[in-house]
Image (cartoon, rainbow, N blue to C red; front, side):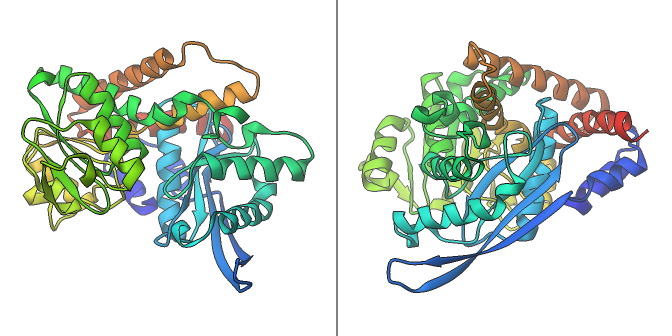
Length: 405
C-alpha cells in the first residue's frame, strides 16, 4: 500500500501534495519483529512470530489493532498500519497508525497457552507501547480477554496499573460498553448519510452481510432496528437468505450458542459463505476478512452500495470494476472508523479525561467527517476512497509542515 499511496498522491493533479511529505508518509517509522517461544500444555516448545508495525506518529501515539491469524506477515501489517494512520487523520483523532499481532491460529491453542503467548509477546514489545507511545486494540483473532492480559502484564512490567495501554478491554477494568458496538454504530451512521445524499428510502432497501462476527452481527441488529431489511447473512461456515428478511437476533443467538448462523433460520435458503457476495441486494456489507471482492468476482456483484466494514475487503482492481458498474463504494477507512473513535473515548477515560454522551459524540464525529469527505468528493469529482485519502493526507501534510518546515 505504500507504493499505491505514493502513486495516489502523485496522480491527484487538482490537489497538490508536497513531494517530501509524500516520501515521508509512504514508509513506516518502525518495524518490530519478535520471536516468541511458547511451552505448550504438552511440554513441547513452539516458536511463534510476532509483529508490530508503527507507521506514523505525526498526530500522536500509534494506534491500531492486534491480529492473531495464520495469514499475517510483515507486508500485510504494513498495509494495515498505513490504513490506521489515514483513518485516525481522517477523523481528526490525536493518534498515528500501527498494526501488529502474532502469526498463530488462536483456535488451535488452549486458553492457557494463548494467555502465555500473549504475555510473552507483551514482554517483548513492552518498551515500544504505552499510553503516550502506542495503544493496541482488538482485531481479528483477539478480544477483550486478550487485551486484559496485555494490560495486566504491562502493568506488572512498569509496576503501575496502566489501563490506557490498550483499548477494547472488559468493562470491569476500564473498558467501555460502547467500544463493542462503536464500529457497527459508525458504519450505520455513514450508511444513513450516503442514503440521504442519494435520496433513497431505507424502508425499501435490502442488505446482505458477509461476516457475522462482532462487527457484522451488531451492524445487522442496528440496521434492522432502523428499519432496513436484512436479506442475507453469512459466517465462515455458511450463509442464509430469506426474501422477507432475517431475524438478526436469532441469528446472533445461534452464532453464540452453536457457532454458526445456519442454526438461526432453519427455514432459510442456505448457501456457501462466499455466495452471499453475489446475491442480488441493494446494500452489500463485506464484514469478514480482506480480499473478498477481487477482479475475479467483482463483475458478479449485484448491488447499489457496498459498505466495506472489513479492512481491505475490496482489492484495487475490483474497486475500479465496481465503480465503472455504477456501484457506490463506501471504503473501510470511512465505514469502520467508529471503532477507533470508540477506542479514543476509552483511552481518554482511562487517562481521567472523561467523555460524556459518547454515542452522540461518536455520531457527531462520523457526521462531520462524512460532510468533509462529501465536499471533497463533490468539488473534485472523486470516488469515496480518493476523497477520504485526500482529507486525511491534507491533515497529515499540514502537521508535517509545522514540524519540518
